[in-house]
Amino acid sequence: MKYGFHDVRNSLERASARETAARVAAGAVAMKLLEEFGIKLHSHVLSIGRVKANPPDQGAIDWDAVEESPVHCADSDVADQMMAEVDAAREAGDTVGGVVEVIAEGVPIGLGSHVHWDRKIDAKISQALMSINAVKAVSIGEGWDLLDRWGSEFQDVIEPVTDPDRPWQRKTNRAGGTEGGMTSGTPLVARFVIKPIATLHNPLPSVDLDTGEPVQAHFERSDVCQAPPAGVIGEAMMALVLADAFMEKFGGDSIPETKRNFEGYQATVGPRLRYS
Ligand SMILES: Cc1cc2nc3c(=O)[nH]c(=O)nc-3n(C[C@H](O)[C@H](O)[C@H](O)COP(=O)(O)O)c2cc1C
Image (cartoon, rainbow, N blue to C red; front, side, top):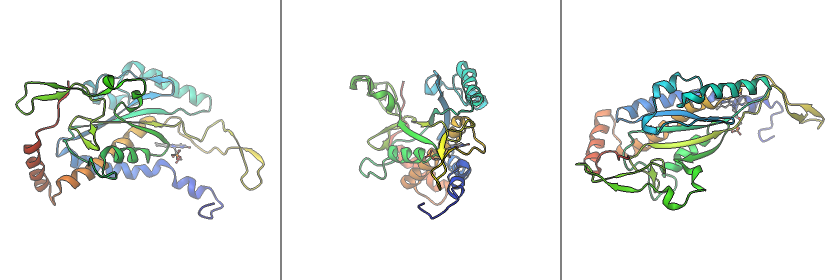
């Protein structure tokens, strides 16, 4: 109606997540840049439908095994159950959604801004992940688990350590690597919920938009569960945001120049933050 089309296909096809192939290609270039500075991105599936993973702590995840997993899951004990959930939905002519986590390791302190609303790194990551087709919620760190916890149970307490670079570290990384709109030097962690997609093999009731007559929704083809591929898109989106923030902070017209700027800054603020 907005564009004056009669054929809904004009919008439907353009809204397809096939468009994200271009984002993944651009994200691969951003990842190459970030790798030059020791930043690496990963993703893994935390749940599919009713099946929830119980993954190891961030630092202990075997990323090669995640890449091998057909459902991109870090908990090999539940991968079969996740596949069974997808098969059950397929057999019922239905679809299932899921929760995906994206992690960037090796992120330096201080990307983003504590002042400008449009430069806050957590806000930028949220927008980028929310822009993925069918994503309905985004959380930074353990944001969704915050509601049933008191402040003392949620804060990333600072503890003393013997370290020549810095005499303290964080005990946990619940805030997901951002504080005050800036990266805090611990890994960046964001989660998103991707809904069960709309085109069902067993269509839901709908109406003919011209006549108002009841009809079954049109079905052509459909994925059953798009959580694992959405993780790949999520990595690309986080890489694009980080590469942008990185170049805003360190600038340069060549990798050696950016490295000089980066190393000068590192010498001032110290290396990435440790947490136990
Ligand atoms: C990797 C991926 C694959 C998708 N495949 C389908 C599909 O086969 N059928 C479908 O109806 N939606 C699919 N979607 C979701 C639609 O693109 C999305 O629901 C639609 O563009 C409307 O956007 P919204 O749900 O964010 O409002 C897919 C999404 C992603 C990320």
